Length: 267
Image (cartoon, rainbow, N blue to C red; front, side, top):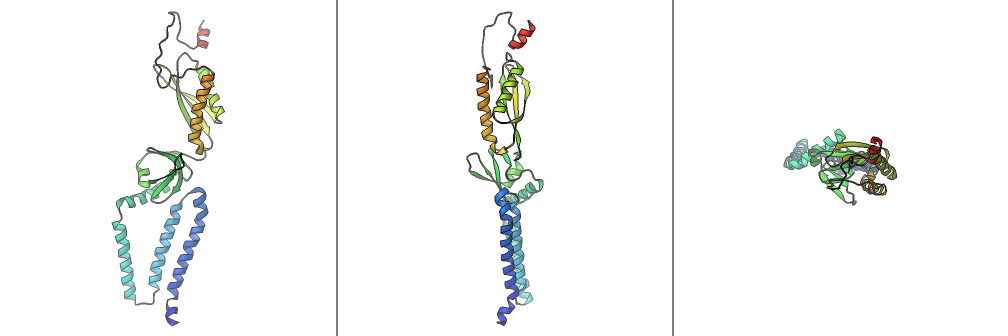
Protein backbone atom coordinates (compact mmCIF):
# COMPACT_ATOMS: atom_id res chain seq x y z
CA UNK A 1 0.00 0.00 0.00
CA UNK A 2 2.86 2.32 0.85
CA UNK A 3 4.53 1.45 -2.44
CA UNK A 4 1.34 2.29 -4.33
CA UNK A 5 0.97 5.54 -2.39
CA UNK A 6 4.46 6.60 -3.40
CA UNK A 7 3.40 6.38 -7.04
CA UNK A 8 0.24 8.44 -6.48
CA UNK A 9 1.70 11.66 -7.93
CA UNK A 10 2.92 9.90 -11.05
CA UNK A 11 -0.45 8.17 -11.56
CA UNK A 12 -2.28 11.49 -11.13
CA UNK A 13 -0.03 13.12 -13.71
CA UNK A 14 -0.74 10.31 -16.19
CA UNK A 15 -4.50 10.55 -15.64
CA UNK A 16 -4.39 14.36 -15.90
CA UNK A 17 -2.50 14.06 -19.20
CA UNK A 18 -5.08 11.62 -20.61
CA UNK A 19 -7.97 13.85 -19.49
CA UNK A 20 -6.38 16.98 -21.01
CA UNK A 21 -5.75 15.22 -24.34
CA UNK A 22 -9.38 14.00 -24.41
CA UNK A 23 -10.71 17.49 -23.61
CA UNK A 24 -8.60 19.07 -26.35
CA UNK A 25 -9.81 16.46 -28.82
CA UNK A 26 -13.48 17.24 -28.18
CA UNK A 27 -12.82 20.98 -27.89
CA UNK A 28 -11.31 21.20 -31.37
CA UNK A 29 -13.47 18.51 -32.97
CA UNK A 30 -16.32 20.84 -33.99
CA UNK A 31 -13.96 23.45 -35.42
CA UNK A 32 -11.97 20.90 -37.42
CA UNK A 33 -15.04 19.19 -38.87
CA UNK A 34 -16.88 22.41 -39.76
CA UNK A 35 -14.25 24.73 -41.21
CA UNK A 36 -11.00 22.71 -41.20
CA UNK A 37 -9.37 25.78 -39.72
CA UNK A 38 -6.29 25.67 -37.47
CA UNK A 39 -6.21 21.89 -36.77
CA UNK A 40 -2.44 22.16 -36.24
CA UNK A 41 -3.17 23.83 -32.88
CA UNK A 42 -4.71 20.61 -31.60
CA UNK A 43 -1.73 18.58 -32.80
CA UNK A 44 0.73 20.97 -31.17
CA UNK A 45 -1.16 21.11 -27.86
CA UNK A 46 -1.49 17.32 -27.66
CA UNK A 47 2.22 16.87 -28.34
CA UNK A 48 3.15 19.53 -25.78
CA UNK A 49 0.85 18.09 -23.07
CA UNK A 50 2.13 14.54 -23.61
CA UNK A 51 5.72 15.74 -23.50
CA UNK A 52 5.18 17.76 -20.30
CA UNK A 53 3.21 14.88 -18.74
CA UNK A 54 6.03 12.47 -19.51
CA UNK A 55 8.66 14.65 -17.86
CA UNK A 56 6.42 15.37 -14.85
CA UNK A 57 5.57 11.70 -14.34
CA UNK A 58 9.27 10.89 -14.29
CA UNK A 59 9.99 13.82 -11.96
CA UNK A 60 7.42 12.52 -9.44
CA UNK A 61 8.73 8.95 -9.43
CA UNK A 62 9.85 7.82 -5.94
CA UNK A 63 13.46 7.27 -6.97
CA UNK A 64 16.75 8.99 -6.23
CA UNK A 65 17.29 12.41 -7.76
CA UNK A 66 20.45 11.28 -9.53
CA UNK A 67 18.53 8.51 -11.29
CA UNK A 68 15.78 10.98 -12.26
CA UNK A 69 18.34 13.35 -13.70
CA UNK A 70 19.89 10.53 -15.70
CA UNK A 71 16.49 9.43 -17.08
CA UNK A 72 15.55 13.02 -17.96
CA UNK A 73 18.94 13.54 -19.57
CA UNK A 74 18.49 10.41 -21.69
CA UNK A 75 15.01 11.56 -22.75
CA UNK A 76 16.40 14.99 -23.60
CA UNK A 77 19.16 13.43 -25.70
CA UNK A 78 16.64 11.17 -27.48
CA UNK A 79 14.36 14.12 -28.21
CA UNK A 80 17.28 16.15 -29.51
CA UNK A 81 18.44 13.21 -31.65
CA UNK A 82 14.95 12.80 -33.13
CA UNK A 83 14.84 16.46 -34.06
CA UNK A 84 18.41 16.39 -35.37
CA UNK A 85 17.91 13.21 -37.40
CA UNK A 86 14.63 14.40 -38.88
CA UNK A 87 14.97 15.33 -42.50
CA UNK A 88 15.32 18.96 -43.42
CA UNK A 89 12.17 18.57 -45.51
CA UNK A 90 10.12 17.69 -42.46
CA UNK A 91 11.41 20.66 -40.49
CA UNK A 92 11.00 22.93 -43.52
CA UNK A 93 7.39 21.81 -43.99
CA UNK A 94 6.66 22.50 -40.32
CA UNK A 95 8.17 25.98 -40.52
CA UNK A 96 6.35 26.63 -43.80
CA UNK A 97 3.09 25.50 -42.18
CA UNK A 98 3.55 27.93 -39.31
CA UNK A 99 4.38 30.72 -41.74
CA UNK A 100 1.26 30.05 -43.82
CA UNK A 101 -0.93 30.19 -40.71
CA UNK A 102 0.68 33.34 -39.38
CA UNK A 103 0.41 35.19 -42.70
CA UNK A 104 -3.14 33.86 -43.26
CA UNK A 105 -2.79 33.56 -47.03
CA UNK A 106 -5.74 31.17 -47.21
CA UNK A 107 -8.24 29.50 -44.91
CA UNK A 108 -10.30 26.37 -44.83
CA UNK A 109 -12.92 26.53 -47.56
CA UNK A 110 -10.94 28.87 -49.81
CA UNK A 111 -10.39 27.92 -53.45
CA UNK A 112 -6.71 27.88 -54.47
CA UNK A 113 -4.68 27.33 -57.63
CA UNK A 114 -1.04 26.32 -57.21
CA UNK A 115 1.02 24.82 -59.99
CA UNK A 116 -1.20 22.35 -61.82
CA UNK A 117 -3.45 21.79 -58.80
CA UNK A 118 -6.83 23.47 -58.49
CA UNK A 119 -9.23 22.80 -55.61
CA UNK A 120 -10.80 23.78 -52.30
CA UNK A 121 -8.78 23.76 -49.07
CA UNK A 122 -10.20 21.07 -46.77
CA UNK A 123 -7.47 20.58 -44.18
CA UNK A 124 -4.70 22.78 -42.80
CA UNK A 125 -2.08 20.71 -40.99
CA UNK A 126 1.34 21.67 -39.72
CA UNK A 127 3.20 19.61 -42.34
CA UNK A 128 0.77 19.55 -45.26
CA UNK A 129 -2.37 21.10 -46.72
CA UNK A 130 -5.16 19.04 -48.26
CA UNK A 131 -7.24 20.30 -51.18
CA UNK A 132 -10.27 18.68 -52.76
CA UNK A 133 -10.15 18.59 -56.55
CA UNK A 134 -13.06 19.02 -58.93
CA UNK A 135 -13.51 15.22 -59.11
CA UNK A 136 -13.74 15.16 -55.26
CA UNK A 137 -10.36 13.45 -54.89
CA UNK A 138 -8.16 14.84 -52.10
CA UNK A 139 -4.54 15.83 -52.70
CA UNK A 140 -2.07 16.45 -49.89
CA UNK A 141 0.43 19.18 -50.74
CA UNK A 142 3.57 19.80 -48.64
CA UNK A 143 3.52 23.22 -47.01
CA UNK A 144 7.01 23.91 -48.33
CA UNK A 145 5.65 23.52 -51.88
CA UNK A 146 2.92 26.09 -51.15
CA UNK A 147 5.48 28.56 -49.81
CA UNK A 148 7.76 28.20 -52.83
CA UNK A 149 4.97 28.55 -55.41
CA UNK A 150 2.64 31.40 -56.31
CA UNK A 151 -0.78 30.60 -54.86
CA UNK A 152 -3.91 32.07 -56.44
CA UNK A 153 -6.55 32.28 -53.71
CA UNK A 154 -10.30 32.60 -54.24
CA UNK A 155 -12.05 33.53 -51.02
CA UNK A 156 -15.10 31.51 -50.06
CA UNK A 157 -17.21 34.65 -49.65
CA UNK A 158 -17.30 35.33 -53.41
CA UNK A 159 -15.13 36.19 -56.40
CA UNK A 160 -15.29 37.58 -59.93
CA UNK A 161 -15.06 34.99 -62.68
CA UNK A 162 -14.18 36.06 -66.19
CA UNK A 163 -13.71 34.90 -69.74
CA UNK A 164 -12.16 36.49 -72.82
CA UNK A 165 -13.53 36.47 -76.35
CA UNK A 166 -12.42 38.12 -79.60
CA UNK A 167 -15.00 39.63 -81.95
CA UNK A 168 -14.39 41.10 -85.39
CA UNK A 169 -14.37 44.83 -86.07
CA UNK A 170 -17.56 44.61 -88.13
CA UNK A 171 -19.62 43.93 -84.98
CA UNK A 172 -20.71 46.92 -82.91
CA UNK A 173 -19.12 47.27 -79.49
CA UNK A 174 -22.48 47.89 -77.83
CA UNK A 175 -23.91 44.76 -79.42
CA UNK A 176 -21.06 42.65 -78.06
CA UNK A 177 -21.37 44.17 -74.58
CA UNK A 178 -25.13 43.54 -74.51
CA UNK A 179 -24.62 39.91 -75.53
CA UNK A 180 -21.93 39.29 -72.89
CA UNK A 181 -23.97 40.92 -70.12
CA UNK A 182 -27.00 38.85 -71.13
CA UNK A 183 -24.90 35.69 -70.80
CA UNK A 184 -23.72 36.85 -67.37
CA UNK A 185 -27.30 37.43 -66.20
CA UNK A 186 -28.45 34.04 -67.48
CA UNK A 187 -25.76 32.37 -65.35
CA UNK A 188 -26.93 34.17 -62.23
CA UNK A 189 -23.85 36.38 -61.92
CA UNK A 190 -24.14 39.89 -60.49
CA UNK A 191 -22.30 43.18 -61.01
CA UNK A 192 -21.27 42.13 -64.51
CA UNK A 193 -19.17 44.41 -66.68
CA UNK A 194 -17.21 44.19 -69.93
CA UNK A 195 -13.60 45.26 -70.30
CA UNK A 196 -11.97 45.87 -73.69
CA UNK A 197 -8.48 44.45 -73.40
CA UNK A 198 -6.82 45.11 -76.73
CA UNK A 199 -7.21 45.90 -80.43
CA UNK A 200 -5.86 42.84 -82.21
CA UNK A 201 -4.97 42.55 -85.87
CA UNK A 202 -8.06 40.49 -86.65
CA UNK A 203 -10.50 41.40 -83.86
CA UNK A 204 -11.24 43.25 -80.64
CA UNK A 205 -10.52 41.38 -77.38
CA UNK A 206 -13.32 41.65 -74.81
CA UNK A 207 -13.31 40.24 -71.27
CA UNK A 208 -16.50 39.65 -69.29
CA UNK A 209 -16.50 39.80 -65.48
CA UNK A 210 -19.28 38.62 -63.19
CA UNK A 211 -19.51 38.27 -59.41
CA UNK A 212 -20.00 34.71 -58.16
CA UNK A 213 -21.15 34.71 -54.52
CA UNK A 214 -20.51 31.00 -53.95
CA UNK A 215 -16.86 30.41 -54.84
CA UNK A 216 -17.33 26.66 -54.46
CA UNK A 217 -19.23 26.71 -57.77
CA UNK A 218 -16.38 28.42 -59.58
CA UNK A 219 -15.40 25.67 -62.00
CA UNK A 220 -18.93 24.57 -62.85
CA UNK A 221 -20.16 28.15 -63.17
CA UNK A 222 -17.22 29.11 -65.41
CA UNK A 223 -18.02 26.21 -67.72
CA UNK A 224 -21.68 27.24 -67.70
CA UNK A 225 -20.69 30.81 -68.57
CA UNK A 226 -18.70 29.64 -71.61
CA UNK A 227 -21.66 27.59 -72.81
CA UNK A 228 -24.06 30.48 -72.31
CA UNK A 229 -21.83 32.90 -74.22
CA UNK A 230 -21.77 30.49 -77.15
CA UNK A 231 -25.57 30.18 -77.05
CA UNK A 232 -26.18 33.93 -76.82
CA UNK A 233 -23.75 34.73 -79.62
CA UNK A 234 -25.33 32.02 -81.79
CA UNK A 235 -28.79 33.48 -81.15
CA UNK A 236 -27.60 36.98 -82.04
CA UNK A 237 -25.63 35.74 -85.06
CA UNK A 238 -22.33 37.15 -83.79
CA UNK A 239 -19.17 35.50 -85.08
CA UNK A 240 -16.44 34.73 -82.55
CA UNK A 241 -12.93 35.28 -83.87
CA UNK A 242 -11.08 33.58 -80.99
CA UNK A 243 -8.32 32.63 -80.88
CA UNK A 244 -7.70 33.49 -84.53
CA UNK A 245 -9.97 33.65 -87.52
CA UNK A 246 -8.53 33.78 -91.01
CA UNK A 247 -11.44 34.76 -93.23
CA UNK A 248 -11.25 36.17 -96.72
CA UNK A 249 -14.29 37.98 -98.10
CA UNK A 250 -14.75 39.99 -101.26
CA UNK A 251 -15.87 43.56 -100.55
CA UNK A 252 -16.78 46.38 -102.88
CA UNK A 253 -14.22 49.10 -103.23
CA UNK A 254 -16.63 51.57 -101.60
CA UNK A 255 -17.32 49.34 -98.58
CA UNK A 256 -16.29 50.55 -95.15
CA UNK A 257 -14.96 48.04 -92.65
CA UNK A 258 -17.19 49.20 -89.83
CA UNK A 259 -20.16 47.81 -87.88
CA UNK A 260 -23.48 48.24 -89.68
CA UNK A 261 -24.82 50.68 -87.13
CA UNK A 262 -21.74 52.85 -87.45
CA UNK A 263 -21.81 52.60 -91.23
CA UNK A 264 -25.42 53.81 -91.33
CA UNK A 265 -24.54 56.81 -89.17
CA UNK A 266 -21.72 57.69 -91.54
CA UNK A 267 -24.18 57.74 -94.46
